[in-house]
Image (cartoon, rainbow, N blue to C red):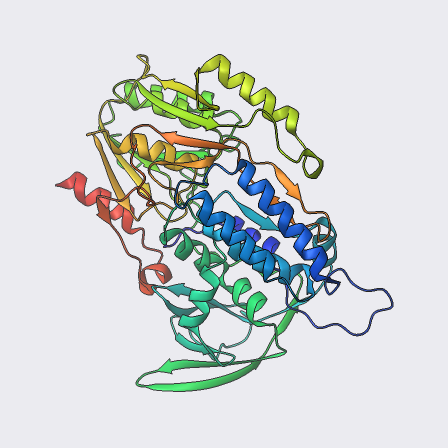
Length: 486
């Protein structure tokens, strides 16, 4: 899975930064400050109340009774003093049981301000996981000859087998339902911070690697830096693509006769997307383009309005989508902000959608109607991977039922039946100040009424090897070209 964005690394840094040792400071650092069991239990009890009161996934993959017991067991197990990071790690494992990729536990503002000042130990080698194995992708010190060559398989780091590392690290990545490709995708770009943050940052690294038929051991020194250097994992930027920077889109014809257009959508931006779509689909009609490739790889979502707008150019008949919430306002408002924005969103939905109240739950049913002007009615290829999430899965789910559409890549990390989002306030727990991201709406893809717990599946799966990544081969585009040539 190449084409991983640097933003994935940022996400992991923000959540996991650091296992550090400190000399005795005059003032206790927020990074090591311990909280009593009573303080931790109070935070956990508030988290329980908030989650059970508002989280739209309760009752989707497990019952309310299941989650009540889960939180009670968690609270009862908080019998030792913990620092903020230790508490956040436990909380993250708890929230993963909700099976919602929009739910997250993040560090406090004070923790973040302190952590970004630190220099951290990193391995001078960039490791990349592929199919539960770990390989060397690059060396950060390009001026010196590297002892570990690109493509070398690593079997152990600092006494821990890499497959055990990967299993543990993936537990901290939340995806919708029971999806695993999303976990594989994000661990691939974030592993170099993940394993250090969870297993320690020593001054010296000891790795075991495969050399021919033998396993050898190498020791080397760590290097210190505030941020891990960027390693280009994907293809080089193609200057021939026409870019709409604010709209996060770019496109290019892949042939001289303008028969196949490759449209990359990095995210569903709220800015300038309408103008970009008008120009692109006008061009498709003018050139009588026969094949449209919609590239949703690594598209983490964004604006619902943008995704609806794109679908109007592509779907053949009117479709419905439902946003559900039992809430009229945020519960436990003293721990969060933005309640006015939620009320305005409810008001906006009631204007553009049909509101139906069933058992105290408001259902806002929105109609997505195909447009007549510049509507595209030819062949569509959709590229997806484990980085396709949220609004990109909305688009993919509604195109999945379109007989003109072919999917290539791997399962999305968002489920085909929908997700929990719409608006996602942050709650701040009173003692540790841990921030909890909590979605409000259940977004239901009415084209897929059955709860599956899985993402949109490709018609033609692709799997990237280490060689593919090193040579920067785009297997998905190659597959499209093969299908078109047939």
